Image 1: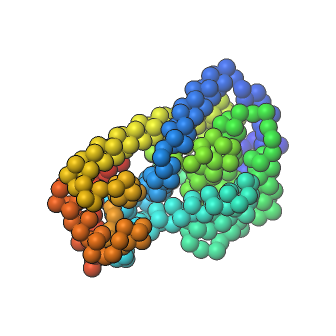
Image 2: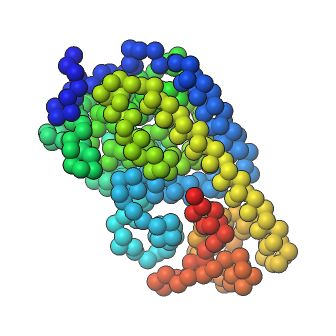
Image 3: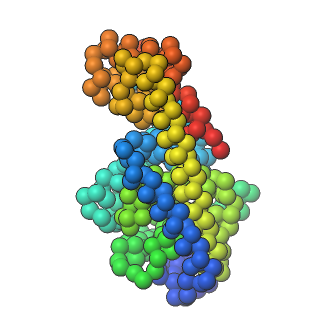
Length: 361
């Protein structure tokens, strides 16, 4: 096997699993704390009266963060408006973020049908992110460069070689193993990014695979985890530790990074969930007092599904006629629970207190 050279396609990328001890004392200790924090988040989600309630919001946050890593920037406000409003938004970044969210939902539905992460599923996810029909990369001379334009890595090339490595990855992900699933997750993520199987969309596809894997391994029943924020905040370290594996087979620092990401993200997710639940309880009490004639538990849930809502959403959810739900929304705005904004020909209503929690760093 040839040593890694950054300017030469890394067709000698070692297959998984690595032939070294991965269960060092430091890794095992960190695995315990990361697993415990993740389990706490999972338990909190399972015990929600409606575990699906916040999913769209969290997945949009993850989509926004994952796209931001690729320098696709949009705002929370524009993103949520574009999901709710009929008006077409011309911001290409917003469109790409929504494509990411749709790709994530597609992956989750496929897992429900068959609990297996395959090469074909990876291709289908990438196609939905990019909204095209491209497949495994066949173009030679693909390189990855740093911010100064210096080549730091040349991934494997040749469709046959790439597919062989993806087949090994698929086998590793889905076969039974004595490794802790979170350690396996770290190995899987490195390998996918090192194979770099597509011309574009590798990073976003790889981050969706993380959430699918946690779901497949029953570590997170509902994949309500905003992982990309951690990578944004520790981006240079992310790429540095990926390269340490490539150049020195230093798996320990990479695995510890990934375990930190799980632990810190799960803890933050749990805290955010508690704040949203607390706000929901407060607003439930306030609406019940201020507007007893229109109050219902279902109505409160409806204005917490996403920060923005509109009349048609409430009609679709069975709250009544256009006139009835229009009166509900006007009453909620009059009492200060929502703020309205005209977008095109329709009016959107913002749960601004929920948005404040979502935007808090």
